[in-house]
Amino acid sequence: MSDDAHLISLRDEVRTWLEANAPKGWRDAYAGMTHAEFAQAQRDWFQTLVRGGYAIPHWPKEWPGGGRSLAEQKVIYEELAQADCPRLLLSFVSTYHAASTLMECGNDTQKARYLPRILEGETWCQGFSEPGAGSDLASLKCKAERRGDVYVINGQKVWSTMAQYADKCLLLVRTNSEGAKQAGITFLLMDMKAKGVTVKPINQIQGDQEFCEMFLDDVEVPVEERVGEENAGWAVAQATLSSERGLTLMELSYRMRGALRRVAGLIRQHGRENDQGILRDFGQLVARVDSACAIADQFLLNRMNGIERVGDASVVKNTYSRVLREYSLLGLRLGGLEEQTRHAITYGDLNTGNWMADFMNSYAWTIAGGSEEVQRNIVAERMLEMQREPKGWAA
Ligand SMILES: Cc1cc2nc3c(=O)[nH]c(=O)nc-3n(C[C@H](O)[C@H](O)[C@H](O)COP(=O)(O)OP(=O)(O)OC[C@H]3O[C@@H](n4cnc5c(N)ncnc54)[C@H](O)[C@@H]3O)c2cc1C
Image 1 (cartoon, rainbow, N blue to C red):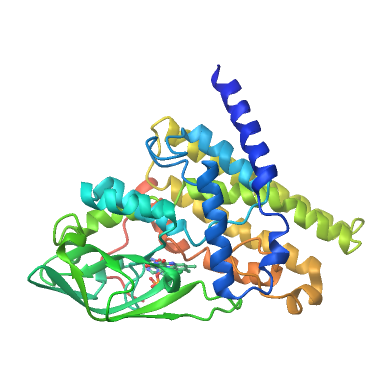
Image 2 (cartoon, rainbow, N blue to C red):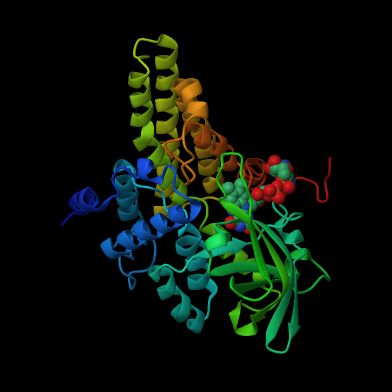
């Protein structure tokens, strides 16, 4: 079978499977759920995708549904977007961040223990950021002291997505305060049920509690749960972070294109089909969404051809987050006061059906996974080779 014929046949297969299995009317079902019910609905959808073989196309081929080429992954993501399925928020860190960390840097015991559990639904969170360490992650202070065969952890983490439901945490800790900041960081796999772990969900402006603060008081983590060597965690963290940008944003860009019909639906619903201003703005939005998808496609092509440059993923991310804001703003304008004030909170972070929540949440996308300004720095300094920002610069 030619490559093209194979991809067409895969598309048919995924589309047929989604017609039978994609959750129908999930926006209505999600609206008014408690947060815990939302988490359960996410678990159920993840397990359905695992059974169908579409949950982890980016994993190696020994895993069910894994071993898909980038072109095949693109087909799967496009079809998921086209079928307007809920996004997997709860298992995102497990299947991307935890999996890529374990596959690239975990030892055989860690891989054998944790990768199957992820497919069974074990939830992971990421404990990197701290109140004083976000963009400048290497400044982190959460301290780990080695006592025999355990590390004893004390400190605070913040913005950990879905930590309130997590079983395990990808944790960065400081094991040495001498010398370069990056050279004293260690990477641990922490049990979230361990004594001394306190998780406090953060109430967000849109009514969600997507992320949490984490307080760690004398938490013991066995030394065998360390990934890589002591003080060599910075390199391991790069494996975690590299999974965050890029392909996942391709999926999101396509989801936005699939969701343009929701904006068109709103135009009709509010009788604005002849409103020239709205039609102009909608036309501009369609072009912007198309350009975001084209940029994501180019990124994928570069990766497939082995010519991805430092900064390519940053361009995809910044484009996506800006266009997402324009998309949700137009939905909000069309919906008027009714849309802004009356809709039930629906959890999940995009295309929830609540335009006000989606608009407010679009701002989070210019911060999560590395802020917009920091992405611009990467493009300027490492892609365009402009002069580097002076070290220790402060306003
Ligand atoms: C929705 C969401 C989910 C998240 N999930 C997680 C998670 O699961 N786990 C986790 O560990 N973290 C998570 N984060 C945290 C995220 O990684 C940080 O918010 C991000 O790295 C920015 O760090 P900060 O919030 O400390 O802001 P700061 O680093 O304090 O930045 C503040 C402002 O200063 C700007 N700035 C900082 N440095 C520079 C510079 N050198 N040049 C120009 N401008 C600069 C920034 O762009 C920003 O506008 C999440 C964040 C969000 C919004």
